[in-house]
Length: 412
Image (cartoon, rainbow, N blue to C red):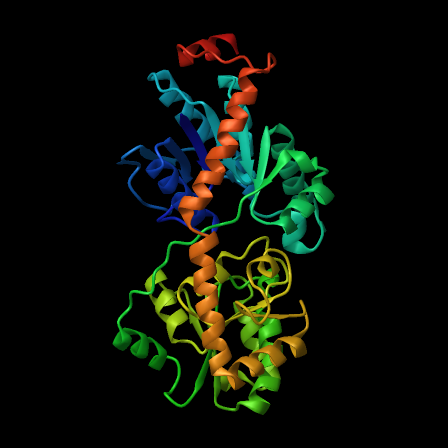
C-alpha cells in the first residue's frame, strides 16, 4: 500500500498542531509497513530539506516559485498548484499511489485534482472548521474558506475527524452523512525525560520557589480563551496571592492581552514568554503547579494530551474534544466554557489540593498510554485505508489502473 499525503505544514515548519499530527501519524504508518509519500508546500521564508527519505517515508517540501501573491487566497491557490505539479512530476517518474490523504482545506484543490487525475480515492482529515474557529461566518473570506471545507468533505470517500464533537460539527455545518465520518483521536509520543535540575531552572526563569506557577501554552487567538484566564486571575490571587501566570506562545492577540492584564491590575503577576521551544514547553509542563487550557473552541486539544503525557495537573474548558479527553476529577479538572469564575474555582481547587493533582496526573498518564499512542492511531487510520481500497475495487465509478500510473493520466 502506498499513500500520498498532502499537508499544509510539516516539521520543521509548523503553525499549530496539524503539522506535528501529520509527522507523527506518517512515521507511525511507515513503522507499520505502509509506504508513505508526503508533499507539503514551503512558503518563501521557510526552510528545510526539500527531499527527505526515511524507511518507507519520503517527504517532499515543495518551494513555490510563483510571483508574490496579492492576497491570502491567491497564496493558497499558488501553493496548491505547486503541490499538484510536484505530485504529477513524481508520478511521471513511475511512482504509483493507492490513495490520497489530505489534511484540512489548505490542500483541498490539489487533493481533488490528484483524485480525479490519478483515479484514486481521497481521504480527508478535517482538524477544525472555519465556522467553529470563529463561532460563525462573518465575512466573505470566512464563507469562502468554509465552502472549500465543504467541498473537501464532499469530494472525500471518507472524512476523518478527531473527536465526537467534531463528528457532530461536520454533520451540522457541512451536512456530512454520519456514516461517512470516522472518529480517530490524536496521539502523543512525549516522555518525561528532563533532569530535575533542568525542570527547576525552567521554573525559576519565571517564578520564585515559594510562588505557584500556572502555565498556558498555545496560539494567542480568540478561540484559545487566554482572555478568560486573565479574567480569572484576580479571583485566584485573592486566594493565592503568590500565584504567577505564565503565558507562552505568540499570535495577534498578544498586545490586547497585555492591555487586559494591565486593566485588570494583574500585570505584575503575568509573564508573557513569547515563542518557546518544544523542549522548554515540555520542561515547563513538568515544572508548573497546573497547566490550563481555557479554549472556547477545541476540536481535540492535543496540548491536553501533551500535558497529560508529561505529568502536568490539568484544567481545561469543558468543550469540544477537551471534554472527551479529560474526565473531571479523574484525569483533570473541567470548568464551564467561557466562564472566568468557574475557571478560577478550578484553579483554586487545584492549588488547594496538591495530592488530588498528583493522583489525577498519574491517572492521566495511564490514559495516554492506554488510548493515545500514535501506534494505536496509525492502526485505526490504516483500517480506514483498507476499507476504502476494498470498496474502490468494487465500485465501477472509480477506474484504477493497477499496472502503470501514467495510464490514468492519459485517460484524464
